[in-house]
Each structure stands twice: as structure tokens, then as C-alpha cells.
Length: 214
Image 1 (cartoon, one colour):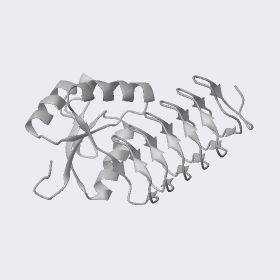
Image 2: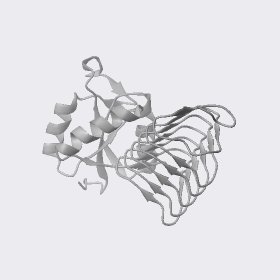
Image 3: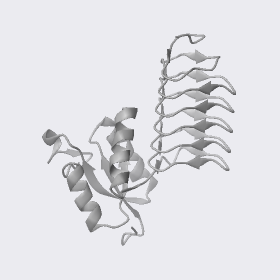
């Protein structure tokens, strides 16, 4: 929906610290009007984050979307599995998703950013990389050329993903971890903070250390 200021209208679901960062990004980008926050936690109703009110839960968000066709939603929940479950619930009910990219982030030529994804301050997504839906590319993370990042992945602050890497859906790459070129990382993998991944990692495996091992 185009507002009178010719901006996107964006609502956040999840009134968390993660939401604070996204709100700040949207303010700095200057291309979005923030419709408010929503969260199923009743204790948060009527509170605010960075001056934006928490207006209710998912049902209130559906009602708000009904009044504002074209409303874009960003799910501001850090836990991958919960974020993706919420995304499925809202998608089934016709909700569309927006993105947020910090002005200091660098998006290379041919890179694709999926719906619901956030790319935070000083992050880099290099050419011809494909970032899936509802991904978090956190502060200072870098993803080099020709990577495939699956839906619901979280690349924590300071992560480095080298060229040609594939990462499966809902994987968590911990703070400062490094993934060497052309590796395949499975679905629902956990890579510990500071790990250096030198080999492919199968679905559901947790790896830590340098070099990273199960």
C-alpha cells in the first residue's frame, strides 16, 4: 500500500529486542511508514518499543491488514523455527511480507533478497547470491558471491560466508563463524560462534570449533 508520503506501510510481529533493530533500520531507510507492533504476549499489549505501540496479537494484525490492503509484515522473532511457523500461519491467511535493508548494507549486482528478510547495518551480500525468505543477515555479516541461503536462516553478527556456499533452511550460523568456499550446509544446522567450517555439514548437526566438528 502506498501511503500519502509515498511509502510502504509496514507492521512488525514480535515486540522484541530484534524488533528494535528492525524499527531503527526502517526509520533510517526512509521508505516505510511503521504501522505498529503486534505480539501474542498479552503482557506486551499497550507497551511500546522506540515509541511504537504494541497494538495486540495476530488477530489484531489480521484485522489491521484488512483495513490496509497491501500492508507488509516483517516477523521480528529471532528463533528460526518460530519465525518460519509464524510466516506459514500468516501466509495461509493472505498476509504479504516486507523486507528491511539498512542503508549501510551493501547489496551486490544480481543478488536476490527474499520476502520477510532483514539485512542489518554494514552487512554485505555480494553479486548473484540468493537470500531466501525470512532470513536474518545480522550486523556486519558478509555473504560472498554465488551463495544460496535457504529460508529462515539466521547469519549472526560478524559471520563470513565465502563464495559458492549453500546453506539449508532454518540453519543458525553463530557469531563470528566462518564458512569456507563451495561447502554445503544442511537444514536446521547449528554452527557455533567462532567456528570455522571446512567440510560439508549434514542436516540437523551442530558443529563447533576450529576446524568445526560435531
